[in-house]
Length: 442
Image (cartoon, rainbow, N blue to C red):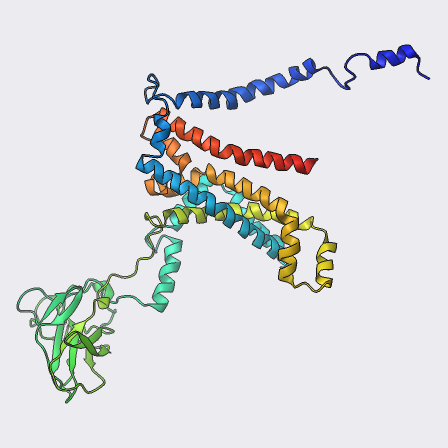
C-alpha cells in the first residue's frame, strides 16, 4: 500500500503523463521553423505584396483585386476555373465509382485496375505532352482526330477532288458559283453536255485513271461527261476530251430547273453520266454541288477556343480517374456484405441495392474523394499550361497567377492578388476535409 508521501509525490505537479511541454516544444521547434519559412512566411508576404503595384514600391490598395473581375483575360480565367470546379470533380468521382464497381464484377479486375491507375505513375508534365499530341489537328499525328476522321469518313464519306473547279474565263462552258460548278448554258433532254474541270491534284487521281469518254446523246434524257481537262506533257484540245485525259468518277451531278433540283446522278469510272429518269421537256442547268470540291474533313479543332477547356478536363479525368477508383474500391470492400445481402433478400433489385444501400454507405468516401478533386481542380496548373500552350481561352486562376507574375506580365502585385484569391477558395475545402478526417478518427 502506497504511503501518503508516495501518493503526494505522484500527485504533485500538473498530473500530466510524459515529458514537460517545453521539452515537447523543443523537439517541435525545427519543424515549426521549417513550416513557418516554407508556408506561413510566403502566405503573409504574398498577402502584403498584393496591395502594391508592379514595382513593389507604391501601395495600390484593392486595385489588384478589382482588376481580377474587370480585366477580360482574368475574367476568362475565373470562368474557366468555375467550369473546372463544377465539372471535373463530379465526373472524376462518377468514373471512379463506375470503375470501382466494375472491378468487383469482372475476372480480370487486377489488370483493369493497373491500366486505369497507370496514368497516376506518369508525371503531369508528361501527361500534358501526351495529350498535346493526342489533340493535334493533323489526323496523321493526333490520335483523337485520327479516330474522328475515320468514323466521319466511314459514314459521311469525303470529297474525292478537293480544290477542283471550272476553268476561269469566258471560253469555259462552266462557271464556279458559291463553291459549286454550274453550266453557263441551259440544256434540254436529249443533249450531251461536256463539263471540263481543272485544278485536280495528281494524288487525288487513281493510279490508272480511266480515259474520259463522252457518252452518246439519249432521247428524253440528259447525258454528259465530267473530266480533268489537262493533258500531261501538253497538247490536247481546250474544253474537249482527249485520249490521255482522265474521267472523274464519283462526281455528283444535278439537273436544276429554276431553283429546284429535278434529278441527280453520279459519274461512272470514265466520268460519263446519264440521268436515269426521263426529264420533262424544258431547259435545265447542270450543277456539280460544292460537296464534290470541299476540302477533306480534317477532324475537330480540339485546341480551338470552343473546345480547349473540355479537352483539358478530359485529360484531367484520364489522370485522376484511377486515383478515385482505388479509394472508392477500398470503401466498397469495407461495406458489410450482410447489409447488401439483406436488401437482396428483401426483394431489392441490383439498382435499388446500389442506390439505396451502397451509395449511402459510400457517402463518406465519395465526399472525401470529391473534396480532394475539388481542391486539385481549383489549383490545376500543369495540364492547362502544357496543353493550352499559353492560350488565354484555356487559362485558369493558377495559370493566370503565373502569367501575371512571371510569364510576361512582370506584375507580382497582380499575381499575388490572384494567388490570395486562389488561397481563399482552397481553404474552405481543406478545412472541410480536415474536419471529416477528425470525425472519422473519433
